Amino acid sequence: MQAPLCITRAFCVALLLMTAACEPVPSPQQTQTAMTVVKESFGTTSNGEAVDLYTLTNANGIEVQAINLGAIITALRTPDKNGQFDDIALGFETLDEYLTSNRPYLGAIVGRYGNRIGKAMFELDGETYSLAANNGPNHLHGGVKGFDKVVWQGEATENGVAFTYVSADGEEGYPGTLMARVTYTLTDQNELIVDYHATTDKATPVNLTQHSYFNLAGAGTSDILGHEVTLNASRFTPVDATMIPTGELRDVTGTPFDFRQLMTIGARIGQDEEQLNFGGGYDHNYVLDGGDDALALAARVHEPTTGRVLEVYTTEPGVQFYTGNFLDGSITGKQGRAYEYRYGFCLETQHFPDSPNKPDFPTTILRPGETYETRTVFTFSVQR
Ligand code: BGC
Image (cartoon, rainbow, N blue to C red; front, side, top):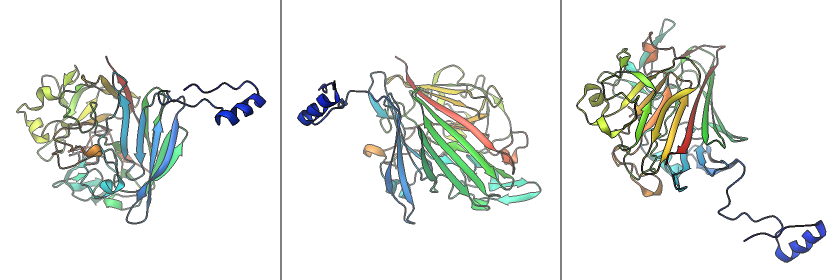
C-alpha cells in the first residue's frame, strides 16, 4: 500500500489524524537502504555471563549474526541467483546448544593458536612450554578451553561488532597476557571484513582464525562435494599421520591438491593418496601465492545449483582447507538439520600449523611492543 504524501505540516497533521501514519510505510518487498546493527540477548551462561546476539544487515539484505561466546558467527544469510535468501553457515539456534553440544568450532574464532602444535609443546627464548594435548598427542585450536569457548566482550560498531578478550598469562599453557580483538564489519559491497588485533606483555605464539563451516547450497541441505573451488596456492604443507606438518612445502602440481584451476571438491577427494588418507579428505594448509602481507585473493568457491559464490581475501600466508571430514550426522543444527559427513567446508586463513616448532615457517611469535594485525575478507556474490 502506498503511504500518503505530506504537502504541508497542517495538511500532514490532518492526514496523520485520518490515517495515523505520515511516513511511508515500508512494504516487506522494499529493500533496506542502510546498514543496521541490532543487539539482543541470546541468553546467559551457567556462570551468569550475558551472551548477546548481534545482527548486521546491509542494504542488500545480507545478514550476519554473531554472538560474544567464542565470537561465533551463528548465521549468514545471502541470496542465490534467483534472489532467494538462505543461511549458508552451519550453527545452532540457541545458546544452550552452543554450550552443551560437541561442536567442532562451528563459526568460532579459534585461538590463541589456530590449528595444531606438535606434541603440545614448543620452545621459546630457551623456555619449554607445555600445552593441553587435546588432539591425540597434539594441541589443537588453543586447547581445552580455547578462544571459541570463552565469553568475549562485545560492542556494536557503526556497521559491525567488535569482540575483545583478555587471555591471562598461562591460560591453556601459553605465556603472556594477550589482549585480542576481532571485529566483523559488513559492507554494502557484500563483504564481511574480519580484522584481528592482538598485543601481549610476554613473547607468545598467536595465530587467530575464523572457523565458519560454509555450505553455499544452504546449511544442512547437502554435502559440499559439488562445490567448485579455486585456491591461489602452488604449494601446501604435507602432514604426518598425526596431522602435523613435516616442514616440507610441497608443489601441488600433478596431485589432488592442485586447485589452481577450478575443480569440484569431490572430483579427487576419494583418491587413495597418502595425504588425503591422513586427513580423511582435505584438511591441509595451503601456502598462498603472493607471499607479502597485502590483502590478496586466497580462494573462490562456486555452488552451481544456487549460483552462490564465496571469495576469501587475506593478508595471511596460509589457508586451512577443511572439508568437514569429521562431521558424521551426530550434530543437529539450525532448522533441525543434521550435519552429515562433509556437509560443510572451512577456509581458515592463518599462519601455518606447528610454526612454533618449525623455524623455517613464517614466525607466529608476537613480542611485547609489537601489534598483531591481520585481515580476512569474505565476499558474497552470485554467478548465473
Ligand atoms: C582441523 C581439523 C579439525 C577441524 C575441526 C580444522 O581446522 O584442521 O583437523 O577436525 O578443524 O576441529
